Length: 244
Image 1: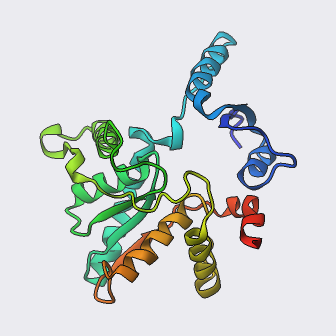
Image 2 (image 1 turned 30 degrees about the horizontal axis):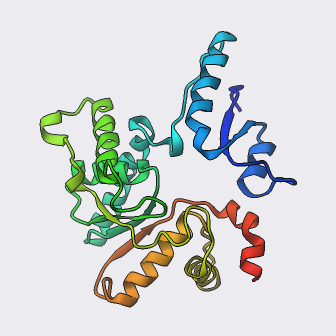
């Protein structure tokens, strides 16, 4: 819309014909660069250097847009949610899919700044709980970067890994692998609510929510808000998985 070129560094081989998000990328005119997943960061930096040599001014967006600037949108979104909760007279516990950490970092920072009493729980879709450095410390780094961009006093807004709640029990077969829990959750939400979740992120988190309800972690007495982060276009790339 604004005449700004978009270059996407994607892990894996291109699919023919393109489907899901890859199809949307193509329709929007993005320049696609496919590399092995382990080489994405190297290619990203090399591509930025090449564009600079060509006289361009590239801005490198990290994986998932997860940096201080990217997380600001979710920190500010908590203001809207807080206003809605105030009108309802309650603070809801929030459950959200989390991977690169920017979404949960922003939500947790916003909750901290607003004195929001509900718990923000991230369902990890690909990061194990015992990874080093800890996943929570990465999210704290992102949140504190957002706080600096807002010129907030680090003495009162500094977050640590203890401020982040994470559940890594639903990693399934790994990133992007569709399994029975994701299939059940996706079909259940579509057939009962007309809401579509993507199988990679949001569907896995909904599967986690369903299991937590079955375990009794959440009951009818709890106020739980599932924060839908999209991903529905990816459903079309998983048609065979849902047909099995």
